[in-house]
Image (cartoon, rainbow, N blue to C red; front, side, top):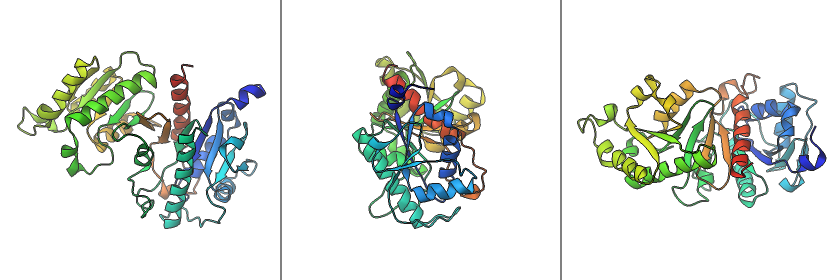
Length: 338
């Protein structure tokens, strides 16, 4: 057991509840039900204690106790701490997408981001939300990644998916496929390659990272026969990156790159659009984690969604959420030189 002075110096990890009708509370509860994990950090849940209690009872975890606190500075070590975003009773409808759930997701997220930016918590781990029901006149972001990134200079963030054996970054994230070619400019790719290189060094302790960059078109454009983005945008961006001393290679056709295990030779992969990176990642990785690189704050999340189809059925696997916590802790340590 850690001595008291060490316990109070543990990092505070803020956890947002996500969609109250999904599996967010289930994975949070399952992770925190193992008291040994509380030796590593102080959990601060941004959510609603009544919803927490509802799922706690549903999962048969009645012995699990928690503190309701007003602010993160009151969080106690070796305890589960909850900050209520509202004292009103929320209607819980497992498996359903509702406006109540969407508004609750946003309220918890905004509170956590405010504390993260203000230094009240050391890192943030987001349970999954429904991108449709979080939309409102006061919230027009495509996801949690876009919201947290909006507080920092445009283009300075990079969406990544991380596991023990593979790291995949996305040049464009939640962008409609028809808009991807116009979005992919030399300036954008050079910036994303730079961010990826820096995060591999500072957040993952890789001294000279090797980065593979995928092509946009089939067969890497086939010398312009199928597309010109490789010659006009991707290759020139790679040339600039290499001139800056970055070990960036490509462009590689996605199917050949992943189909022949070429990916194993690189520390990270930069995909051109969301599904180009997400599909092979989720095929090759188990218990992956989403990480928003390039920001001065640490934010992670599980790679799974709200799981409406299994909500409140005690079927959700908590491993991705657990790994999201430990990745956040590892990145904090690496940034602090620990």
